[in-house]
Amino acid sequence: MGPPSQTNITNVRKRTIYQLDTPFSTVSWPDISLEDQESILELLCSLLSSLGQHRRDHVKPSKGKRAAKREKVTADQKDLAKDQPIPQAPELGLEVDIGFNVITRNFEGKSRGESGHAENADGDVDMQTNETVYSMVFVARGDQSSAFNCQFPRMVATATKELPPDSQTRLIGFSKSCSERLSKSLHIPRVSSIAIKRDAPGCKALWDFVREKVPPVDAAWLGKPQDQTSYLPTRINSIETTVGQKKARKT
Image (cartoon, rainbow, N blue to C red; front, side):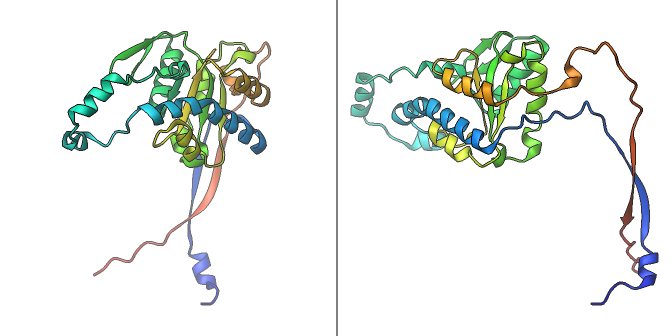
């Protein structure tokens, strides 16, 4: 096929589109080197391994309600279960939230200054006061679309803007795929995000490393107003783009 003719080039339809944006709409993820991400992931998996081991040994994976109805349990198995009570889960489990929904709900409650709530494994509602603050939030960015996790920087910045920089929640986004590795550590089918509350037991080594390597989320427009401000005019980008040819009507 030869090059387009001069007539086709001159007949290309064009139109101008406009781009409007504001510096207040986006908050960038903290910049973390791949080497530091790998070290943080290693420390995190090591910390969560006790929770995964407890689930692996004492929590039966759900196969659905229909499968549970079809399953027949003998009387001997019931007696054995009574004689061997399930050990209590590690204390760390009370300080770790897993999943997009519960983390988002708690951040929203913190931002509004309200109490949050979440259902536990028994279906009961656990009330959480607005003093509940996450020290670290981990997101498997490499396994998700950006549309699924783009709100995390804004949530973290908004919820912890009143805290001193050294105590603000650290947001760690793993660039490489790591969901499968986290799932294996927790013995959960799928893990997209994990949040650890402040003063969680056994987290000192991880927190010290994260605080040293990961800066707080930067959202300058949420900070206190400066003494001297300058007027910034509206910026409108004009872009000329081509428009596809109209299809000929069938007669």
